[in-house]
Length: 143
Image (cartoon, rainbow, N blue to C red; front, side, top):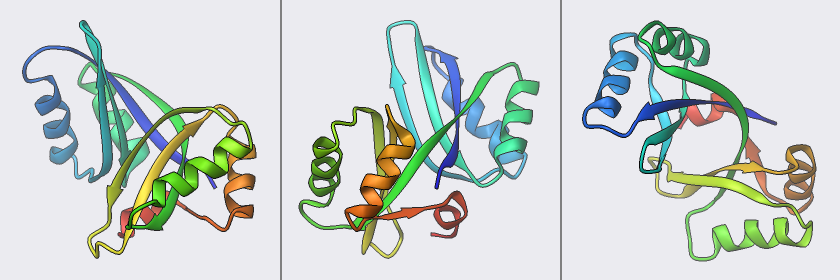
């Protein structure tokens, strides 16, 4: 089960992140998870939102470069070792983690780990066989 994520490329200068979040807010797009990675010259903002196509449309209309990729969302108990168990499962399958980020849901009982793997379908199979719960974008938005 893959989750659509948008990636926005932005100059590494003051106010650009505020502009993106304002555009999304003004257009009724709710951000459910995000990650920012930067270099000296630019940043990559990765977002999981409730309205993917709307977000892409309004950001492009406002001059931002936007891409879409698939990621996997894994729900784990929010307790010591949750991430380690997931990564051990992936290690045993010799699958490379390209990047990841995480958030804790409102109840505080579970965490959601967002992954981009080298071999996405194989990772899903390994995680499901390992007893992990893979969740959809709709489920993320309902948290």
